[in-house]
Image (cartoon, rainbow, N blue to C red; front, top):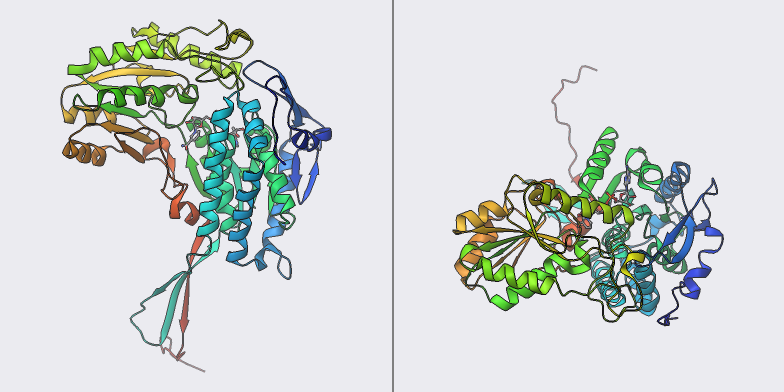
Length: 522
Ligand code: NAD
């Protein structure tokens, strides 16, 4: 069934709403339940504060129950157990999830937009990426039959086989809620693991819908579990509980440090996808209009709430004045509005708290001597289509900050909002030096018509993704992740599946013999 929302109705799709009855949004051991302590959380649309739904607010005891279920499901053997599923069956399951999301795409997109305040067409595009991710891992499952190893001994058969890691704790952020979930759940299932998923507390709805899909597809109880709730409470056991074999986290650097520290105590496998402060380097010989247009996308798409946002513009000095003037001019005309506002070009920030954080980041830049060329104040005017007020939601306008120095916080800190700082360079070496002057290392771009410059700069940048004459695309078949403090490990691509497996050496001696190493004194 697809959901066709009217442009005035902000309610959840009937199917989604039904799945929320009694705030029974925890999926544990194959059954839906409310939080044991009965606590709930009200989800509101950040674009206008309208009520979306009431969901369960789990605490650590709910998560521990989910971990026990995932642990038992992983260890269970025999007919119908998860362990008895072949890789082909697991791959088919992941493909079936893709097909089910495709069938209910409108409903998923709607739920995503209500939680995030993101424009509906953007959420619909996200769903296409999510479907592609499930399809990629569904097809990849079972492709790796292991590897024969030459033991330099004709009597030995040695091979490397890939085994599931075990019970996985999956923790995801609010900016691309289901996309981040898909990057983890798809390879996790394809690899034969069980999991407990904790989506961001502000944006749980598409994860809830996904678990309904998985439930409908007949996955054994306990393989897939969901807890909705706050990180410090519901999330914490996923890095501290010794029954968890791997924790995969996407979110902020500070949280990543806490999670890695907790996980170290029981020596879990840890995968971290953290933030970024991503340089977008424009040489004077670049295609001017393409570079300018993409500089806007890089900084202001999804109001800058993108881990790989090009929030640090680095322009060759000879074109900087005109380029920045044009950027300021275009940024000042970007239209803001809610999910259903057809005239809006970008949407709300996720919460009041986040809005205040972005505003404080810009205020600090001012205090430290930077100049705000456009934007720089919380938006309170009419929405793009004039039907409402931006003051009812959490809107911040596209903001361009120049006259910065490298000592300023705005150049190093991730704002995770619609802001961009401007720096200039004179030489290729200087451009590279600026681009690498960050503790992060997630993504960057170089714009030039000189393929030699493009090649040298792209190789010299210490970032997990480098675009040449583009900004933003990623591919499910290509690894994604960070250098430096942007994280540990990779999602997507073959390595994204490998993260969810352990390599095992199976060494067979086909001619067992007495070694004589220890003298036989019987
Ligand atoms: P966050 O770190 O506040 O929260 C992320 C998740 O962690 C949420 O589900 C939260 O509830 C949970 N959490 C918080 N404390 C926890 C704890 N002690 N134990 C377990 N779980 C805990 O991040 P956010 O504000 O939701 O997301 C924004 C951040 O995510 C940005 O820094 C952004 O760059 C990063 N991000 C990175 C990528 C990437 O691919 N590298 C993608 C998206 C977002």
